[in-house]
Length: 258
View: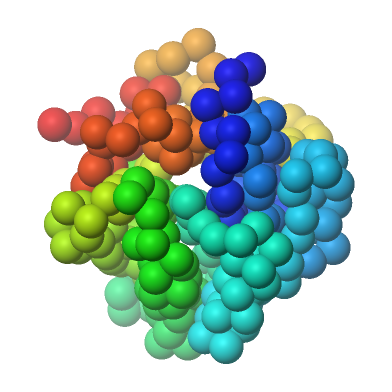
């Protein structure tokens, strides 16, 4: 493992599980100081403890502007500034009710947009004044292949993720000349630790479900959280300095586009 992030002060919002947790650990392994921020503070504290002494946790609710400002202020106070951010949080509790445009409840739409899009706006507005104090800084958002593809369900989720892509491009175009790069990580189907646990409880039915995704993916395996963490680490390092305004598809080839 390189130390290309040595001296970097980073925050990962949405870090208690999955991609965010793997990213915290990868950034620490590459030498950074990392604030693990999550509404699940006990989960974030566990991740920070596992990552090492240069990681610490703060509570954040990205649907609440005051909470976002307080969490970012705490991170900056602890580390003395910010060099990069990974905005990764999303509310997936309503996704099973996120059907099609005619059937979904507007409460599902409102909650999805409040967290999965507006929450990213709030996080960006909170971290950017600190990032812009540096000559070179970076922000990475987690979006999804759902923003590019088409499916008969998850309308709200796809709309929110498409909005994140537009937000990223705005930041990249507006502040790129001031040294701030902005990019999007767009994961494909990913087997996280939490998903593995759920699948193990469902036996043969779960295996059939996985087989469907494997058949759709032109690769030898499905994605893992660590695949995405590696890309985030690159985008937050000097190796990613010439990448700005890009959507990086990390999906094993399940979605190929120009």
